[in-house]
Image (cartoon, rainbow over all chains, first blue to last red; front, top):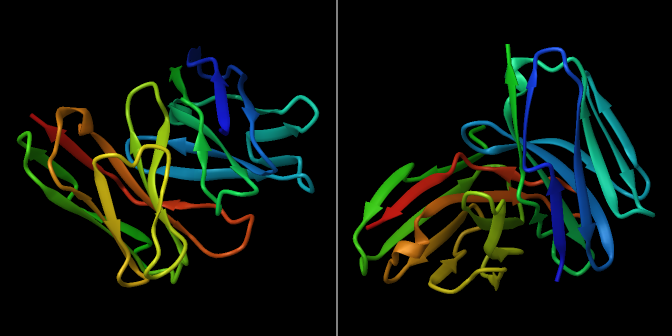
Length: 112
Length: 113
């Protein structure tokens, strides 16, 4: 059974701080790892990491996949109050028809 | 282009009542999924479909049924609601291929009393 564990479960920082969110996984026939941001409603897609694309960056957000350690990190630099959200990590295994197995999520709160 | 929509947005049921949640997507996606989200547990897959007329069980299928009669719609049914089914339900869809992200609907908040 595929498994995803995120840490920390919650994090409180001040604007301008840099944060690192962690995701570790166990999956059969790993295909991809995805990061989503969830504010009040639906999760919105941030990044997808695969064996051929282990590092992604968009603005202040970046993510790296470590296939050896079976983990990924999501970095957010110069945090803003608008970064406050739940960050979800999910993996896709090779036999799962693209099903996502999610971690518990990290609740990030950024204070002014 | 509305993306993924869900109906209704909120619902309160009494134990034993039944209801159907509707998910619709206008992106011509092959794959559709139903998840539930409970505090501290992330999203868990209930059922999914890899194409019109097909359905399969996910991680937590008990107490739910689904149907995919049309490619654009995926229905989730609760035949006899229980308080343990109080949750937020999300529908998602994606196109074919191995490395495509899922697009999520806005969710339905269901309370079973």
